Length: 68
Image (cartoon, rainbow, N blue to C red):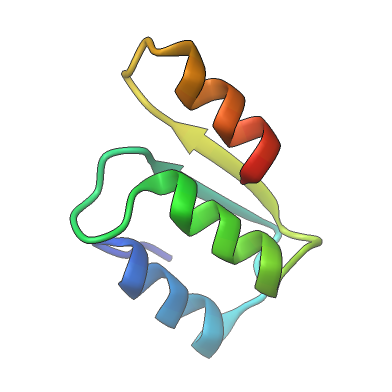
């Protein structure tokens, strides 16, 4: 299943989840990928979370590992 943004992704998870995995882009309107994956971790801790990004900032990768 797909969603156009983080808020829609959370709605899909609530309606049809949990899923085995969630893949999120870092740059999304309304909610970035890190925030989405952190919320997924809180609601569905057994779901594998993957952050996809073209950003080269190390801090984004570290935050993804530690928070999402």
